[in-house]
Image (cartoon, rainbow, N blue to C red; front, side, top):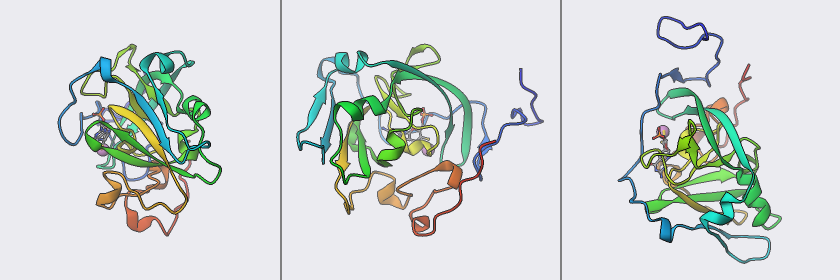
Length: 212
Ligand SMILES: Nc1nc2c(c(=O)[nH]1)N[C@H]1C(S)=C(S)[C@@H](COP(=O)(O)O)O[C@H]1N2
Ligand SMILES: [Mo]
């Protein structure tokens, strides 16, 4: 077991700037937990796709993709971080490959049940550690943690990882479309290691803090 300090935080772990350690993540979301409707579930990739067509995937389509396990920390923009969550599911990059964007596209709006959405750079979506998690700690996700599927993007603040995710739209260049928190003054990019919390920082990029 790793050595811990007086607060219980593991020593020799570097958190993103401005974050403090928390033993367990806090269940957090805006609005109610959606009632599961497996018969109606689908995952839609639309907007500025390469061929202009929208692609709708069913559960079985995504289950066929390679399964990937990612051990990731959660960094909530309210400043807590929870360490070492074990997520599993297909890579977002594999879905991008099945439904690619038009060449000029740099950003997506990921959307979830009840209209929750977040802006994400295509490069972040393509990270090998970005997954569409269906499982946590070896068990299917609970409803309050995002069942049946949640986006996990370890290096971004957790508001960029919608629970109950249902798809994304590729945003055409110059689009001003914003997600739930981005409409409320939060950063379009949201890299926790650059402490990109607020929209007012968007024009003054910060250096990335080394992770080890
Ligand atoms: N659909 C949806 N996903 C969401 C949110 C939300 O309000 N709605 N909140 C985000 C925020 S701000 C955080 S910190 C995490 C919390 O995840 P947890 O409940 O698994 O701890 O969910 C993220 N995903
Ligand atoms: Mo959060």
